[in-house]
Amino acid sequence: MSDIIASLFVLLQKVIPKYLLTNIVYRLARVRTAWIKNLLIRQFVHYYKVNVEEVSQPVPDGFETFNAFFVRELTSDARPVATETSAIASPVDGTVSAAGVIDTNSIFQAKGLSYSLADLLATDTEEAAAYINGAFATIYLAPYNYHRVHAPLDGELVTARYVPGDLFSVNAATVKRLPRLFVRNERLVCHLQTSTGPMVLIFVGAMNVGSISTTWTGETRPRKSGVVEQIDILEAGAEPGFSKGDGIGWFNMGSTVILLHPPSATDAYRDLVPGQTVRMGQAIGQTVSPS
Image (cartoon, rainbow, N blue to C red):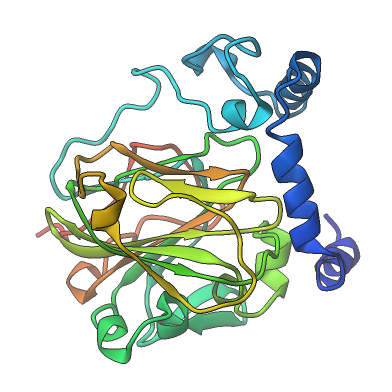
């Protein structure tokens, strides 16, 4: 995408009715009429070269809707999970947007752009302070990627918080040109206590992401405005604990996941580089620095 086209794309996003378009996509992706959903699935598989051999159900007949295909499960052997206790398993298939050390309270977005840790978490200063000078990784899920999100370590959910916001695209062109993108968009912030310490996993919403779902919160539809919602995870009824590699949620259309670790894991993602492709389950970092 040329610089001119990319800049026009970002500008266009500021004026188009993103919530209306997202709602239309949401409804279309859930059409159950067989010939419509099969056409959508077949065209998607052809255009994005989806590997149907690793999908756990027949394509397209094994799926009631296009969305069911989009959040498809894979065969049990498709994504081996890193077994070393301190190894952080990639929670998703995707491309690394950025990774490294949190500079005091500032997280790198793209060249010349950063955003506040406290703004990202939408939380009190004390809670955010635990991650100052820690480590982060931002992973983008393109439409063709597998869209389920898995646990990067053994642990349990401590708190979950839904933050209303906008629905800008999170593709590379927008990330490079729109300041504070990840604190402008809606997001679901999950605070985890893992086998090697605390961490945060954030589901970032985006244009055409009709909803974000987790095993604890169910389906969360986009809300542009309103108060930050503290989700009662006990009321949800799901067990808070999980093992590395367990499925914990999914995006209904493409988006981004952000991982945060405290200063004790400053070097967690030192070997990740922007543009690197990762697959769910592979070791993308260590919570304990090698001696």
